[in-house]
Length: 334
Image 1 (cartoon, rainbow, N blue to C red):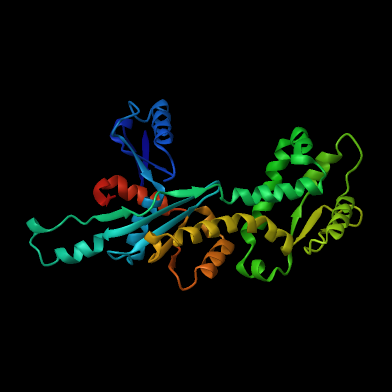
Image 2: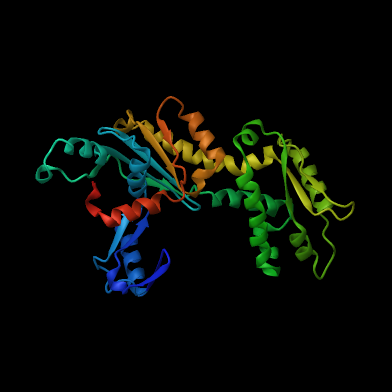
């Protein structure tokens, strides 16, 4: 095992490394044992129960890192950690019963032999929860729309002809998804374009040419019949060879809203529990936490109820906390 450091490479034996793998707090013991067996099969630990591997709960790691960066947690604070990833949203609620910073303040007037070890202590308030409400479900809603537009149930024909075209389509949509701002989402004004050249070429291969203009005309006609209020989709490009699909914000919002509503409803349900009536902080982390839309909806719904904490790099908070935890597992006690 080679560890790259500043200007040098450090050779290490696998047995010299303490491995910290973060896992969702909603995982059952069987899930954790599976992870240990996988680590053993990967030959990073000598046996599944080895002490060389620590399984750390992702929301707790987030709190560890946030306590250092925010320097705002006090004894008695109650923190709900919302770890929003691609597949799942993982929720953990804890009460801070001691902080490292308060201990350091107490130690200032004590001789070295009487100083306490700075330790963050957390008490779990409710059972961890969560669900399949990650950002990839926005992708699934978009693919459902595309399936309807292309008249290809579950996009099976497209997958069979060119599986890579689905990946390219999702890459195109990712650019659209991450560009949606709070203003776009609230006002529902404007539109976003996505290039479907490869999709159209694949569908036209070996048969009748598929034109985007025809697909859009059919889709808009169906929408008018349903009177769904979203407005029609459009096209861009050279006359007769249009390849860019133009989606109004009202349509794009239908991809986001069902997913975000599930997150908001779960959070609001939790806040009604007796243990969380005096919740002080909501810590938002994970890749999906970078979404302007999710940040706005949480802030708007929870205004004046809790303090929303968004770390500068929400995607790295869990990893940073895991490293701190690995260096000092006694840093946290639940």
